[in-house]
Length: 202
Image (cartoon, rainbow, N blue to C red; front, side, top):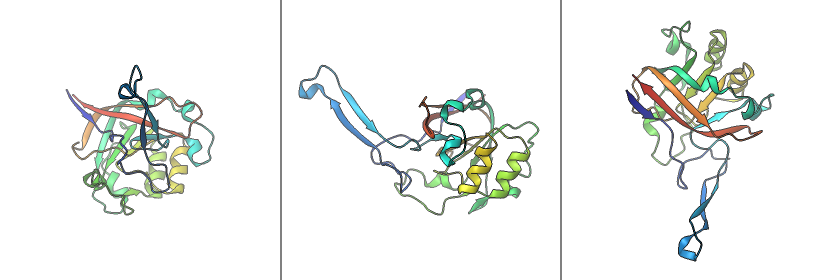
């Protein structure tokens, strides 16, 4: 088996959404200062790095407490997207959604991850694709961007109780079938939570 850690490392110099908090790591306790142990204080937004959105992120009913863990562990399909602006219906035309409950979109976004820049021209889902995923009964949607799309796209997905995973790095992951393990922090009542996301190929 091969394991792909597609999580984005959390660090002070990482790129965050322009209007979201930046990451701060400060020494709360330090042996060098006479403390008996080292403890860092971590400050970050709930949508930092690789993370899961809950419905309340866009004003819908449901927090991270309501995100079903069973949806975040299981077979997933990575779809290579050729479009340069939006994931379009043509990009998912060959996906057999009768057998796919979890889909992760690999776009040109992944190649630009780690360059230290925020790219406003990231590839996102179109509303048409969001509606198509709803019709097909998809339960988990992931993308290699900080956002899956605009407010309409979020409401279409989250309103159907789909789990949205954002900010994963698929640059080293070939398209195909995997087992997904996505474990968001257990933040009570939260609108989202950072997550460790791993793909396993047998």
